[in-house]
Length: 491
Ligand SMILES: Nc1ncnc2c1ncn2[C@@H]1O[C@H](COP(=O)(O)OP(=O)(O)OP(=O)(O)O)[C@@H](O)[C@H]1O
Ligand SMILES: C[C@@](O)(CCOP(=O)(O)O)CC(=O)O
Image (tube, rainbow, N blue to C red; front, top):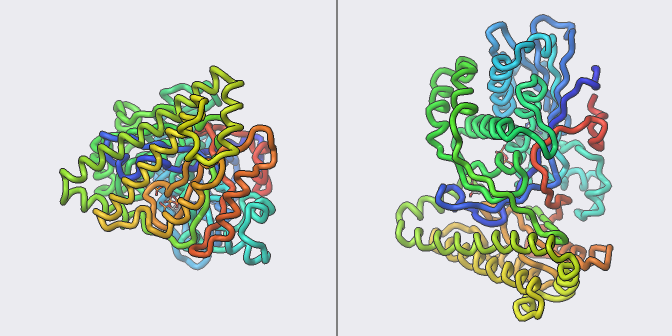
Protein backbone atom coordinates (compact mmCIF):
# COMPACT_ATOMS: atom_id res chain seq x y z
CA UNK A 1 0.00 0.00 0.00
CA UNK A 2 1.31 3.47 -0.85
CA UNK A 3 0.72 5.08 2.53
CA UNK A 4 1.98 8.50 1.45
CA UNK A 5 -1.48 9.03 -0.04
CA UNK A 6 -3.28 7.87 3.12
CA UNK A 7 -5.79 10.35 4.55
CA UNK A 8 -6.06 10.12 8.34
CA UNK A 9 -8.75 11.95 10.29
CA UNK A 10 -9.17 11.76 14.03
CA UNK A 11 -12.09 12.66 16.33
CA UNK A 12 -12.22 12.85 20.15
CA UNK A 13 -14.36 10.97 22.66
CA UNK A 14 -16.72 12.77 25.06
CA UNK A 15 -17.74 13.23 28.68
CA UNK A 16 -21.02 15.03 29.37
CA UNK A 17 -20.30 16.62 32.73
CA UNK A 18 -23.52 18.65 33.06
CA UNK A 19 -26.88 18.47 31.34
CA UNK A 20 -27.66 14.76 30.98
CA UNK A 21 -31.37 14.31 30.01
CA UNK A 22 -31.90 18.09 29.79
CA UNK A 23 -29.82 18.25 26.61
CA UNK A 24 -32.40 16.04 24.87
CA UNK A 25 -34.67 19.11 24.93
CA UNK A 26 -33.64 22.09 22.76
CA UNK A 27 -34.64 24.48 25.57
CA UNK A 28 -31.59 23.34 27.58
CA UNK A 29 -27.84 22.93 27.07
CA UNK A 30 -25.26 20.36 28.09
CA UNK A 31 -21.60 20.88 28.93
CA UNK A 32 -19.48 18.30 27.13
CA UNK A 33 -15.72 17.85 27.45
CA UNK A 34 -13.78 16.34 24.54
CA UNK A 35 -11.14 13.78 25.49
CA UNK A 36 -7.58 13.22 24.35
CA UNK A 37 -8.56 9.61 23.68
CA UNK A 38 -9.47 9.60 20.00
CA UNK A 39 -10.65 7.56 17.06
CA UNK A 40 -8.67 7.45 13.80
CA UNK A 41 -9.88 6.51 10.32
CA UNK A 42 -7.22 6.08 7.65
CA UNK A 43 -8.23 5.85 3.97
CA UNK A 44 -5.94 4.71 1.15
CA UNK A 45 -6.82 4.28 -2.54
CA UNK A 46 -5.04 1.70 -4.68
CA UNK A 47 -4.99 1.43 -8.43
CA UNK A 48 -5.24 -2.38 -8.45
CA UNK A 49 -7.19 -4.69 -6.19
CA UNK A 50 -6.37 -7.96 -8.01
CA UNK A 51 -10.10 -8.71 -7.84
CA UNK A 52 -13.07 -7.89 -10.01
CA UNK A 53 -15.02 -4.67 -9.48
CA UNK A 54 -14.35 -1.70 -7.21
CA UNK A 55 -13.79 -2.86 -3.64
CA UNK A 56 -13.92 -1.27 -0.22
CA UNK A 57 -12.16 -3.09 2.61
CA UNK A 58 -12.53 -1.92 6.21
CA UNK A 59 -10.27 -3.23 8.95
CA UNK A 60 -10.84 -2.77 12.68
CA UNK A 61 -7.74 -4.61 13.89
CA UNK A 62 -8.64 -4.34 17.57
CA UNK A 63 -11.47 -6.85 17.16
CA UNK A 64 -11.83 -10.53 16.35
CA UNK A 65 -13.61 -10.58 12.98
CA UNK A 66 -13.21 -6.81 12.57
CA UNK A 67 -13.04 -6.84 8.77
CA UNK A 68 -15.78 -5.93 6.29
CA UNK A 69 -15.52 -6.08 2.51
CA UNK A 70 -17.85 -4.53 -0.06
CA UNK A 71 -18.18 -4.10 -3.80
CA UNK A 72 -19.11 -0.61 -4.96
CA UNK A 73 -21.26 -1.31 -8.03
CA UNK A 74 -21.70 0.93 -11.05
CA UNK A 75 -24.80 2.54 -9.52
CA UNK A 76 -22.73 3.51 -6.45
CA UNK A 77 -24.36 0.86 -4.24
CA UNK A 78 -22.28 -0.82 -1.61
CA UNK A 79 -22.79 -4.59 -1.67
CA UNK A 80 -21.43 -6.50 1.37
CA UNK A 81 -19.31 -9.56 0.54
CA UNK A 82 -19.83 -12.64 2.74
CA UNK A 83 -16.88 -13.77 4.88
CA UNK A 84 -15.11 -17.16 4.72
CA UNK A 85 -18.06 -18.80 6.52
CA UNK A 86 -20.35 -17.48 3.75
CA UNK A 87 -22.14 -15.22 6.25
CA UNK A 88 -22.45 -11.46 6.04
CA UNK A 89 -21.30 -9.87 9.26
CA UNK A 90 -22.95 -6.45 9.16
CA UNK A 91 -21.63 -3.44 10.97
CA UNK A 92 -24.46 -0.98 10.35
CA UNK A 93 -22.45 1.95 11.69
CA UNK A 94 -19.61 1.36 9.23
CA UNK A 95 -21.82 0.40 6.30
CA UNK A 96 -24.15 3.40 6.60
CA UNK A 97 -21.23 5.79 6.98
CA UNK A 98 -19.59 4.34 3.85
CA UNK A 99 -22.71 4.15 1.70
CA UNK A 100 -23.97 7.66 2.41
CA UNK A 101 -20.59 9.39 2.40
CA UNK A 102 -19.33 7.68 -0.77
CA UNK A 103 -22.58 8.61 -2.50
CA UNK A 104 -22.14 12.27 -1.52
CA UNK A 105 -18.41 12.19 -2.38
CA UNK A 106 -19.10 10.75 -5.85
CA UNK A 107 -21.48 13.65 -6.44
CA UNK A 108 -19.09 16.35 -5.21
CA UNK A 109 -15.74 15.06 -6.48
CA UNK A 110 -15.45 15.35 -10.26
CA UNK A 111 -12.45 12.98 -10.20
CA UNK A 112 -14.11 10.47 -7.88
CA UNK A 113 -13.27 7.45 -10.08
CA UNK A 114 -9.61 8.40 -10.34
CA UNK A 115 -9.38 9.17 -6.60
CA UNK A 116 -11.08 5.88 -5.76
CA UNK A 117 -8.92 3.64 -8.02
CA UNK A 118 -9.99 0.02 -7.71
CA UNK A 119 -9.60 -0.52 -4.00
CA UNK A 120 -10.35 1.70 -1.03
CA UNK A 121 -8.68 0.39 2.11
CA UNK A 122 -9.81 1.81 5.45
CA UNK A 123 -8.31 1.20 8.86
CA UNK A 124 -10.34 2.23 11.94
CA UNK A 125 -8.85 2.29 15.43
CA UNK A 126 -9.79 3.85 18.76
CA UNK A 127 -7.54 4.55 21.73
CA UNK A 128 -7.53 1.77 24.31
CA UNK A 129 -9.67 3.87 26.66
CA UNK A 130 -12.81 3.40 24.53
CA UNK A 131 -12.95 -0.28 25.50
CA UNK A 132 -12.44 -2.04 28.82
CA UNK A 133 -8.84 -3.28 29.02
CA UNK A 134 -9.55 -5.69 31.88
CA UNK A 135 -9.25 -8.79 29.60
CA UNK A 136 -5.85 -7.57 28.28
CA UNK A 137 -4.60 -6.76 31.79
CA UNK A 138 -5.85 -10.12 33.13
CA UNK A 139 -4.09 -11.95 30.29
CA UNK A 140 -0.84 -10.27 31.37
CA UNK A 141 -1.51 -10.68 35.11
CA UNK A 142 -1.44 -6.92 35.56
CA UNK A 143 -3.51 -4.96 38.10
CA UNK A 144 -6.05 -2.39 36.82
CA UNK A 145 -3.96 0.76 37.36
CA UNK A 146 -2.92 3.69 35.19
CA UNK A 147 0.66 2.32 35.23
CA UNK A 148 -0.56 -1.00 33.74
CA UNK A 149 -2.73 0.79 31.17
CA UNK A 150 0.23 2.92 30.09
CA UNK A 151 2.27 -0.26 29.51
CA UNK A 152 -0.20 -1.55 26.87
CA UNK A 153 0.50 -1.13 23.14
CA UNK A 154 -1.56 1.66 21.57
CA UNK A 155 -4.73 0.33 19.88
CA UNK A 156 -4.19 -3.10 21.44
CA UNK A 157 -6.50 -6.04 20.70
CA UNK A 158 -9.65 -6.20 22.81
CA UNK A 159 -9.49 -10.04 22.61
CA UNK A 160 -13.16 -10.15 21.64
CA UNK A 161 -15.68 -9.17 18.96
CA UNK A 162 -17.30 -5.74 18.56
CA UNK A 163 -20.62 -7.23 19.63
CA UNK A 164 -19.17 -8.49 22.93
CA UNK A 165 -16.72 -5.75 23.86
CA UNK A 166 -17.28 -3.81 27.09
CA UNK A 167 -17.34 -0.10 26.14
CA UNK A 168 -16.35 2.55 28.64
CA UNK A 169 -18.84 5.27 27.66
CA UNK A 170 -16.51 7.62 25.76
CA UNK A 171 -18.77 7.52 22.71
CA UNK A 172 -17.05 5.00 20.45
CA UNK A 173 -19.76 5.00 17.77
CA UNK A 174 -19.95 8.81 17.50
CA UNK A 175 -16.15 9.28 17.35
CA UNK A 176 -15.83 6.37 14.92
CA UNK A 177 -18.53 7.65 12.57
CA UNK A 178 -17.25 11.22 12.72
CA UNK A 179 -13.68 10.20 11.88
CA UNK A 180 -14.85 7.85 9.10
CA UNK A 181 -17.25 10.33 7.46
CA UNK A 182 -14.69 13.15 7.69
CA UNK A 183 -11.82 11.00 6.37
CA UNK A 184 -13.84 10.05 3.28
CA UNK A 185 -14.97 13.64 2.64
CA UNK A 186 -11.37 14.84 2.92
CA UNK A 187 -9.99 11.96 0.82
CA UNK A 188 -12.39 12.80 -2.00
CA UNK A 189 -11.70 16.53 -1.64
CA UNK A 190 -15.30 17.39 -0.75
CA UNK A 191 -14.04 19.33 2.28
CA UNK A 192 -10.72 20.38 3.74
CA UNK A 193 -9.90 20.28 7.45
CA UNK A 194 -6.98 22.35 8.71
CA UNK A 195 -6.20 22.72 12.39
CA UNK A 196 -7.32 26.18 13.47
CA UNK A 197 -8.36 27.39 10.01
CA UNK A 198 -11.00 25.05 8.59
CA UNK A 199 -13.87 26.52 6.64
CA UNK A 200 -16.86 26.77 9.06
CA UNK A 201 -19.13 25.54 6.27
CA UNK A 202 -17.04 22.39 5.74
CA UNK A 203 -17.06 21.64 9.45
CA UNK A 204 -20.81 22.21 9.77
CA UNK A 205 -21.44 20.01 6.70
CA UNK A 206 -19.29 17.23 8.22
CA UNK A 207 -21.13 17.62 11.53
CA UNK A 208 -24.55 17.36 9.87
CA UNK A 209 -23.48 14.36 7.80
CA UNK A 210 -22.04 12.52 10.84
CA UNK A 211 -25.15 13.34 12.93
CA UNK A 212 -27.41 11.98 10.23
CA UNK A 213 -25.41 8.76 9.75
CA UNK A 214 -25.21 8.22 13.52
CA UNK A 215 -28.96 8.69 14.00
CA UNK A 216 -29.72 6.34 11.12
CA UNK A 217 -27.36 3.65 12.46
CA UNK A 218 -28.80 4.01 15.97
CA UNK A 219 -32.34 3.96 14.60
CA UNK A 220 -33.24 7.02 16.71
CA UNK A 221 -32.48 10.71 17.08
CA UNK A 222 -30.67 11.33 20.38
CA UNK A 223 -29.45 14.76 21.47
CA UNK A 224 -26.33 14.46 19.29
CA UNK A 225 -23.97 15.94 21.89
CA UNK A 226 -21.55 13.04 21.28
CA UNK A 227 -21.18 13.67 17.52
CA UNK A 228 -21.03 17.41 18.19
CA UNK A 229 -18.10 16.98 20.57
CA UNK A 230 -16.40 14.58 18.13
CA UNK A 231 -16.49 17.53 15.68
CA UNK A 232 -15.97 20.57 17.93
CA UNK A 233 -14.28 19.17 21.08
CA UNK A 234 -15.32 20.69 24.44
CA UNK A 235 -18.34 23.01 24.35
CA UNK A 236 -21.76 23.97 25.62
CA UNK A 237 -24.18 22.19 23.30
CA UNK A 238 -27.78 22.85 22.38
CA UNK A 239 -29.42 20.26 20.19
CA UNK A 240 -30.72 20.43 16.61
CA UNK A 241 -34.39 20.07 15.70
CA UNK A 242 -35.06 16.37 14.95
CA UNK A 243 -37.50 17.50 12.23
CA UNK A 244 -34.47 18.49 10.14
CA UNK A 245 -33.66 14.85 9.47
CA UNK A 246 -36.87 12.94 10.17
CA UNK A 247 -38.02 13.01 6.51
CA UNK A 248 -34.70 11.75 5.16
CA UNK A 249 -34.51 9.08 7.88
CA UNK A 250 -37.98 7.84 6.97
CA UNK A 251 -37.03 7.80 3.29
CA UNK A 252 -33.83 5.78 3.99
CA UNK A 253 -35.84 3.33 6.06
CA UNK A 254 -38.58 2.91 3.46
CA UNK A 255 -36.56 2.60 0.21
CA UNK A 256 -33.21 1.44 1.63
CA UNK A 257 -30.19 3.74 2.04
CA UNK A 258 -28.53 2.64 -1.20
CA UNK A 259 -31.49 4.01 -3.18
CA UNK A 260 -31.45 7.48 -1.65
CA UNK A 261 -29.69 9.91 -4.00
CA UNK A 262 -26.77 12.16 -3.14
CA UNK A 263 -28.91 15.20 -3.90
CA UNK A 264 -31.55 14.10 -1.39
CA UNK A 265 -28.82 13.74 1.26
CA UNK A 266 -27.15 17.05 0.36
CA UNK A 267 -30.44 18.92 0.56
CA UNK A 268 -30.60 17.99 4.23
CA UNK A 269 -26.98 17.92 5.40
CA UNK A 270 -25.52 20.75 3.29
CA UNK A 271 -28.33 23.02 2.14
CA UNK A 272 -30.55 23.21 5.23
CA UNK A 273 -29.65 25.56 8.08
CA UNK A 274 -29.11 23.42 11.16
CA UNK A 275 -30.03 25.04 14.46
CA UNK A 276 -27.70 23.23 16.87
CA UNK A 277 -25.63 25.64 18.95
CA UNK A 278 -22.02 25.33 19.99
CA UNK A 279 -20.39 27.65 22.50
CA UNK A 280 -16.74 26.76 23.07
CA UNK A 281 -15.85 26.10 26.72
CA UNK A 282 -12.48 24.91 27.90
CA UNK A 283 -11.55 23.59 31.29
CA UNK A 284 -9.45 26.28 33.00
CA UNK A 285 -5.68 25.72 32.88
CA UNK A 286 -4.41 23.41 35.62
CA UNK A 287 -7.79 21.65 36.00
CA UNK A 288 -7.42 18.02 35.09
CA UNK A 289 -10.19 15.65 34.02
CA UNK A 290 -9.96 12.12 35.45
CA UNK A 291 -12.21 9.26 34.45
CA UNK A 292 -12.97 5.83 35.80
CA UNK A 293 -14.95 2.94 34.47
CA UNK A 294 -17.14 1.32 37.15
CA UNK A 295 -17.43 -2.33 36.27
CA UNK A 296 -21.13 -2.69 36.98
CA UNK A 297 -22.88 -1.17 33.96
CA UNK A 298 -26.25 0.44 33.22
CA UNK A 299 -28.38 0.52 30.10
CA UNK A 300 -28.56 4.14 28.90
CA UNK A 301 -31.74 3.59 26.80
CA UNK A 302 -33.50 2.16 29.91
CA UNK A 303 -32.43 5.12 32.05
CA UNK A 304 -33.54 7.56 29.35
CA UNK A 305 -36.94 5.94 28.83
CA UNK A 306 -37.52 5.85 32.62
CA UNK A 307 -36.71 9.56 33.02
CA UNK A 308 -38.62 10.71 29.95
CA UNK A 309 -41.61 8.53 30.90
CA UNK A 310 -41.75 10.17 34.35
CA UNK A 311 -41.35 13.64 32.80
CA UNK A 312 -44.26 13.02 30.45
CA UNK A 313 -46.50 11.81 33.29
CA UNK A 314 -45.51 14.68 35.62
CA UNK A 315 -44.97 17.70 33.36
CA UNK A 316 -45.27 20.41 36.02
CA UNK A 317 -43.02 18.81 38.60
CA UNK A 318 -40.51 17.84 35.88
CA UNK A 319 -40.56 21.31 34.38
CA UNK A 320 -39.61 23.01 37.62
CA UNK A 321 -36.91 20.39 38.32
CA UNK A 322 -35.51 20.84 34.76
CA UNK A 323 -35.41 24.63 35.25
CA UNK A 324 -33.67 24.36 38.63
CA UNK A 325 -31.14 21.90 37.26
CA UNK A 326 -30.48 24.03 34.20
CA UNK A 327 -29.77 27.06 36.40
CA UNK A 328 -27.09 25.12 38.30
CA UNK A 329 -25.67 23.50 35.12
CA UNK A 330 -25.33 26.92 33.52
CA UNK A 331 -23.75 28.37 36.65
CA UNK A 332 -21.10 25.60 36.53
CA UNK A 333 -20.43 26.26 32.81
CA UNK A 334 -20.39 30.06 33.12
CA UNK A 335 -18.15 30.04 36.17
CA UNK A 336 -15.67 27.71 34.46
CA UNK A 337 -15.65 30.12 31.49
CA UNK A 338 -15.11 33.06 33.83
CA UNK A 339 -12.20 31.28 35.54
CA UNK A 340 -10.57 30.60 32.13
CA UNK A 341 -10.90 34.30 31.32
CA UNK A 342 -9.38 35.37 34.64
CA UNK A 343 -6.52 32.90 34.10
CA UNK A 344 -5.68 34.72 30.85
CA UNK A 345 -5.94 38.16 32.40
CA UNK A 346 -3.96 37.60 35.58
CA UNK A 347 -1.51 34.72 35.32
CA UNK A 348 0.26 35.44 38.64
CA UNK A 349 -2.93 35.59 40.73
CA UNK A 350 -4.22 32.51 38.92
CA UNK A 351 -1.13 30.43 39.73
CA UNK A 352 -1.40 31.53 43.37
CA UNK A 353 -5.06 30.47 43.45
CA UNK A 354 -4.19 27.07 41.98
CA UNK A 355 -1.58 26.61 44.72
CA UNK A 356 -4.25 27.34 47.37
CA UNK A 357 -6.93 25.10 45.81
CA UNK A 358 -4.55 22.21 45.24
CA UNK A 359 -3.58 22.08 48.90
CA UNK A 360 -7.00 22.52 50.46
CA UNK A 361 -10.44 20.91 50.29
CA UNK A 362 -13.22 22.61 48.36
CA UNK A 363 -15.30 23.38 51.49
CA UNK A 364 -12.66 25.99 52.43
CA UNK A 365 -12.69 27.85 49.11
CA UNK A 366 -15.84 29.94 49.39
CA UNK A 367 -14.40 32.00 52.27
CA UNK A 368 -10.99 32.61 50.69
CA UNK A 369 -9.54 36.12 50.22
CA UNK A 370 -8.79 35.27 46.61
CA UNK A 371 -11.61 35.91 44.16
CA UNK A 372 -10.31 33.12 41.92
CA UNK A 373 -10.37 30.58 44.75
CA UNK A 374 -13.93 31.70 45.54
CA UNK A 375 -14.87 31.13 41.89
CA UNK A 376 -13.62 27.55 42.16
CA UNK A 377 -15.71 27.33 45.36
CA UNK A 378 -18.72 28.48 43.36
CA UNK A 379 -18.20 25.76 40.74
CA UNK A 380 -18.02 23.24 43.55
CA UNK A 381 -21.16 24.54 45.30
CA UNK A 382 -23.21 24.69 42.07
CA UNK A 383 -22.12 21.19 41.12
CA UNK A 384 -23.16 19.92 44.59
CA UNK A 385 -26.59 21.37 43.79
CA UNK A 386 -26.54 19.61 40.39
CA UNK A 387 -25.84 16.34 42.15
CA UNK A 388 -28.61 16.75 44.72
CA UNK A 389 -31.11 17.67 41.99
CA UNK A 390 -30.03 14.59 40.01
CA UNK A 391 -30.62 12.49 43.13
CA UNK A 392 -34.06 14.08 43.44
CA UNK A 393 -34.70 13.17 39.79
CA UNK A 394 -33.50 9.62 40.55
CA UNK A 395 -36.01 9.31 43.40
CA UNK A 396 -38.96 10.86 41.62
CA UNK A 397 -38.48 8.97 38.35
CA UNK A 398 -37.34 5.81 40.21
CA UNK A 399 -34.30 5.65 37.93
CA UNK A 400 -30.79 5.16 39.39
CA UNK A 401 -29.06 8.23 37.90
CA UNK A 402 -26.78 8.76 40.89
CA UNK A 403 -27.23 5.46 42.75
CA UNK A 404 -26.35 5.42 46.47
CA UNK A 405 -23.18 3.38 45.91
CA UNK A 406 -21.96 6.04 43.45
CA UNK A 407 -22.91 8.80 45.92
CA UNK A 408 -20.68 7.27 48.59
CA UNK A 409 -17.76 7.04 46.14
CA UNK A 410 -18.24 10.60 44.81
CA UNK A 411 -18.55 12.04 48.34
CA UNK A 412 -15.32 10.34 49.40
CA UNK A 413 -13.45 11.72 46.36
CA UNK A 414 -14.93 15.19 46.90
CA UNK A 415 -13.28 15.37 50.32
CA UNK A 416 -9.77 15.21 48.82
CA UNK A 417 -7.56 18.28 48.40
CA UNK A 418 -7.86 19.96 44.99
CA UNK A 419 -11.06 18.21 43.92
CA UNK A 420 -13.34 20.74 42.18
CA UNK A 421 -16.14 18.33 41.38
CA UNK A 422 -16.83 14.65 40.89
CA UNK A 423 -19.95 13.13 39.38
CA UNK A 424 -21.60 10.58 37.11
CA UNK A 425 -21.26 11.58 33.44
CA UNK A 426 -24.03 11.60 30.82
CA UNK A 427 -27.01 9.48 31.74
CA UNK A 428 -25.31 8.42 34.99
CA UNK A 429 -26.03 5.02 36.51
CA UNK A 430 -23.41 2.51 37.58
CA UNK A 431 -21.16 2.93 34.49
CA UNK A 432 -18.55 5.54 35.18
CA UNK A 433 -17.46 8.56 37.21
CA UNK A 434 -15.47 11.69 36.42
CA UNK A 435 -13.43 14.01 38.62
CA UNK A 436 -12.03 17.50 38.00
CA UNK A 437 -8.95 18.01 40.12
CA UNK A 438 -6.41 20.81 40.52
CA UNK A 439 -2.73 19.92 40.86
CA UNK A 440 -0.27 22.12 42.70
CA UNK A 441 1.53 23.98 39.88
CA UNK A 442 4.79 23.77 41.87
CA UNK A 443 4.78 19.96 42.17
CA UNK A 444 5.08 18.04 38.94
CA UNK A 445 4.26 14.66 40.48
CA UNK A 446 0.45 14.61 40.21
CA UNK A 447 -0.07 14.19 43.97
CA UNK A 448 -3.78 14.99 43.97
CA UNK A 449 -4.56 12.77 40.97
CA UNK A 450 -2.62 9.97 42.71
CA UNK A 451 -4.80 10.44 45.82
CA UNK A 452 -7.96 10.15 43.69
CA UNK A 453 -6.64 7.03 42.00
CA UNK A 454 -5.78 5.58 45.39
CA UNK A 455 -9.43 5.88 46.47
CA UNK A 456 -10.53 4.11 43.27
CA UNK A 457 -7.97 1.36 43.75
CA UNK A 458 -9.05 0.53 47.30
CA UNK A 459 -12.80 0.99 46.80
CA UNK A 460 -14.40 -2.30 47.73
CA UNK A 461 -18.07 -1.51 47.12
CA UNK A 462 -17.60 -1.51 43.33
CA UNK A 463 -14.83 -2.29 40.89
CA UNK A 464 -13.42 1.08 39.83
CA UNK A 465 -10.87 1.03 36.99
CA UNK A 466 -9.05 4.18 35.90
CA UNK A 467 -9.00 5.37 32.30
CA UNK A 468 -6.05 7.27 30.86
CA UNK A 469 -8.13 9.90 29.05
CA UNK A 470 -7.89 13.53 30.00
CA UNK A 471 -9.57 16.59 28.51
CA UNK A 472 -8.48 18.03 25.19
CA UNK A 473 -9.68 21.11 23.39
CA UNK A 474 -9.32 19.85 19.84
CA UNK A 475 -12.13 18.51 17.69
CA UNK A 476 -12.02 16.68 14.37
CA UNK A 477 -8.61 16.99 12.73
CA UNK A 478 -6.45 15.70 9.89
CA UNK A 479 -3.26 14.06 11.06
CA UNK A 480 -0.23 12.40 9.47
CA UNK A 481 -0.06 8.62 9.67
CA UNK A 482 3.50 8.69 11.01
CA UNK A 483 2.55 11.15 13.78
CA UNK A 484 0.06 8.77 15.40
CA UNK A 485 1.86 6.48 17.83
CA UNK A 486 1.14 2.83 16.97
CA UNK A 487 -0.93 3.44 13.81
CA UNK A 488 1.56 2.63 11.05
CA UNK A 489 1.88 -1.01 12.13
CA UNK A 490 -1.54 -1.68 10.58
CA UNK A 491 -0.26 -0.81 7.07
N1 LIG B 1 -13.40 0.28 16.29
C1 LIG B 1 -14.57 0.16 15.66
N2 LIG B 1 -14.63 -0.28 14.39
C2 LIG B 1 -15.79 -0.41 13.75
N3 LIG B 1 -16.99 -0.16 14.30
C3 LIG B 1 -17.00 0.28 15.58
C4 LIG B 1 -15.80 0.45 16.31
N4 LIG B 1 -16.13 0.89 17.56
C5 LIG B 1 -17.48 1.00 17.59
N5 LIG B 1 -18.01 0.64 16.40
C6 LIG B 1 -19.42 0.61 16.03
O1 LIG B 1 -20.15 1.31 17.01
C7 LIG B 1 -21.10 0.43 17.63
C8 LIG B 1 -21.24 0.77 19.11
O2 LIG B 1 -22.19 1.74 19.19
P1 LIG B 1 -23.00 2.05 20.57
O3 LIG B 1 -23.89 3.21 20.26
O4 LIG B 1 -23.51 0.80 21.14
O5 LIG B 1 -21.80 2.49 21.48
P2 LIG B 1 -21.54 3.87 22.18
O6 LIG B 1 -22.71 4.17 23.05
O7 LIG B 1 -21.12 4.87 21.17
O8 LIG B 1 -20.27 3.51 23.03
P3 LIG B 1 -19.73 4.14 24.36
O9 LIG B 1 -20.14 3.22 25.45
O10 LIG B 1 -18.26 4.19 24.10
O11 LIG B 1 -20.37 5.52 24.53
C9 LIG B 1 -20.52 -0.96 17.41
O12 LIG B 1 -21.52 -1.94 17.44
C10 LIG B 1 -19.92 -0.82 16.02
O13 LIG B 1 -20.91 -0.95 15.02
C1 LIG C 1 -29.20 10.98 28.75
C2 LIG C 1 -28.50 11.71 27.62
O1 LIG C 1 -28.84 13.10 27.73
C3 LIG C 1 -26.99 11.63 27.79
C4 LIG C 1 -26.38 10.26 27.64
O2 LIG C 1 -24.98 10.39 27.78
P1 LIG C 1 -23.99 9.15 27.88
O3 LIG C 1 -24.12 8.37 26.61
O4 LIG C 1 -24.36 8.39 29.11
O5 LIG C 1 -22.61 9.80 27.99
C5 LIG C 1 -28.94 11.16 26.28
C6 LIG C 1 -28.53 12.01 25.08
O6 LIG C 1 -28.23 13.19 25.25
O7 LIG C 1 -28.56 11.50 23.95
